[in-house]
Image (tube, rainbow, N blue to C red; front, side, top):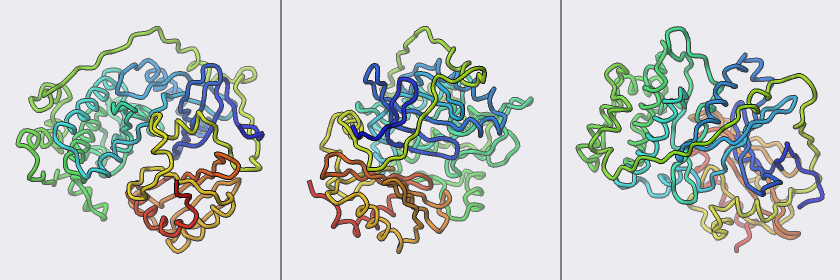
Length: 432
């Protein structure tokens, strides 16, 4: 490890950033007592208080802590400092389902059905506990090292909103291409029916390799969604076409229900119901996170890094998929995930300067600090400006690992950016 201090919260040593959103960051961490690797979602307490979401956040976290399902990322515990809330989650290292689609174009029907069954299992179980996702899309569907689907951000994808007196949710959230028409309509919606619509869009993508509703003009896109204006490709079987059309019914009243999906003949082929773990779960930590009496036992100490962070063995292995270190430093520049990485023997400052130079002609502004580089596109993409975070990690005295990660924006736009920039980085990449 580097002699430079790292951040530590309770029993956890905090490492690299795995992802970030408007209200939270997700970081790699290690339990120093057990050696177990986890992911920690860090929420800004001030923002939660500002949005008057304390009660709802506590309810959602309590519910998520009680959920034990093989297809939902597990929540272990919750901690807080004076300014932050730390949600300790299961670390899943098999990548996104999105990347599987990007690499193969589309999945065969039996494989698509297998993932769809796991998705429906997870969503149906969480709905039975009163938890709704509201932003289901391939990027929120992860795979573990055994290829098992894991839904991430369930109940925590955005600041949760209160269900009003009419029993409906009233917040338009989610990614437009996956969002049900009643959510866009802003007249209130049933969280379960809206989630099922998103599941239908995901099934279409798994089998087609592209979105059912797509247009660069947002109003035209919305019109297509309102009318359920889509066409199934010729290779879809008749039974899956019927299923998708019943799920993507723009009228939530006549839309297929989750129970009907589970009883559908196409869905039931090769279906294996999940087995559940039952355990005594304490919610003491959830009740304590907003307790302002006394000093917090989990105060975070941050120290400025004077050199690139050193990456030790446990983090190096976790960076790769499972224990396969062959995939750690990518030899092929073709398939790019939401994050990608390469090795370089050049000094950290020189690496970041080269990336900065290569990104400038592509229309990206940059900000450099502490061996980290933030790039932000000048133009707004499909999900706003594309933002990219780059960090250099020292693996050995003469070897650095460079991580390039999408911070905000569209994953496909990040794929395109990386392919464009990689040509200008050939002289800094160490060929293993």
